[in-house]
Length: 302
Image (cartoon, rainbow, N blue to C red; front, side, top):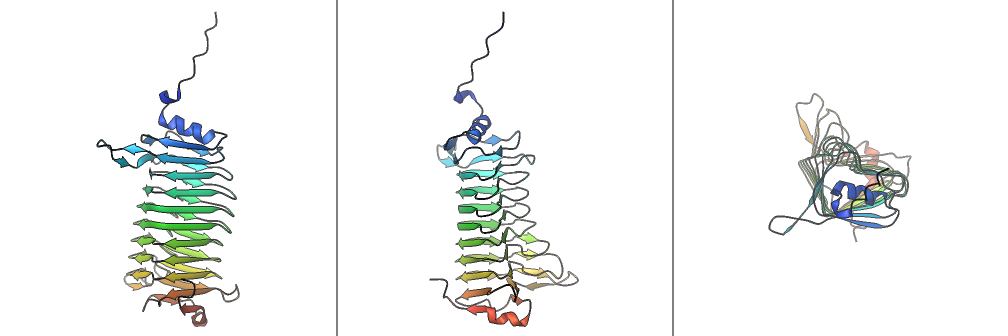
């Protein structure tokens, strides 16, 4: 006599990882409330849920809230798919082997009150016409480009810290727009290019943000903190620059370099604007003709 199939386990009996995977596979809008830490045993994989929100609701022993940890164990990747809409809140995301949020055209990614540390590769990777919003979060001690964008993406960051990351730039904009309000870039290191932000075409606006102790180690490179190229239009509103350096030829000495302006004269009306005024040293022009594209003005900071 054939045995009856076992009854499915009730949701409460499933592991937190299994319940997360069920939420990712759901065909309906889902808010997944995580109450405990997860150590992944495989990639999270393709997001089939049309609108997924993962919210950490973990508690300390004294009952106070803490970030719930999702640990990729240096082996696994995160949320993927063609055009996913994913929101992550109140999480510590650590030791992911590949992108935590990745997708094709028209992605909508949100990260809020999260700590991202010891990850390898892009944390966020998008294709075209996507939206990325990051708030009240920190990226500390990661490797590689952390936010990599596609054409016509819109990136909004508020109260975000990028500290002690390696192998940057931490943000790479390719024909995308970035708005950064009260963002900090501290002690990031790259071998070449920029260690903090690289802007190619389109542009960026930084408001009350700071760039401190960012370094480029390959002799002869440019743009220790920020590198601008193409016809990008970039504005710094009341920002602070301090001790950003690049290695000089020979590698024994360093020079102060906060912003490298490599705009292409034939690409379009690119410009750089500093409000109230540019740093006294550390703004390097690829050629003297670009001086007319650099302004001390607050016209775009109102």
